[in-house]
Image (cartoon, rainbow, N blue to C red; front, side, top):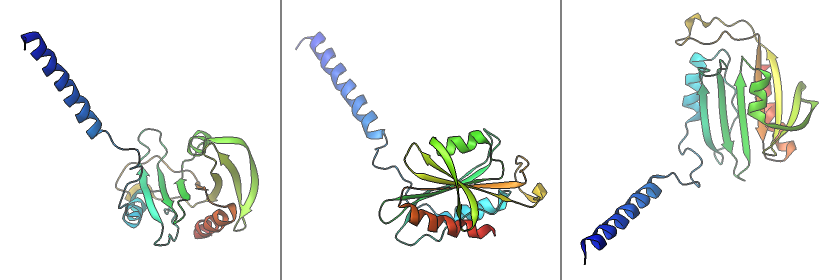
Length: 188
């Protein structure tokens, strides 16, 4: 075999090795969720830094958490707690919460289509939206007392006097209302 043919063969093999390595290191789409998310631990940590008590839901053991995150607000001045679950029927239930909500933050969280409607959940007024993902979103606001942020270990944006909760789900709306009522009742 000539030197040119050997060089071309080695070149093709090297290219194939690089492509195979790239494919092997690329995350697979079927691994969308973080396995082993410890919501209770994340919530306990958020409780030490947030300007509000983090919202929770009494998730059955058949549910699995796919994320529980504290967004510090370093990029947008909106510190927020977000947690999401998949039910045993692979339906989604999520919570987003902040004491610094803006219209843009709400829009980014919901990605709404259509116009909102006003309704009540657990005798609390909420704004009902439908998102581009076809989930139903309930946006509720609660007055909150001034929070002394001096004992918090990190520097946060000064919280407003309201706390905003966005509760979302892909399940039947009656089931979503029950779950939302459980969360909203924590703030009465």
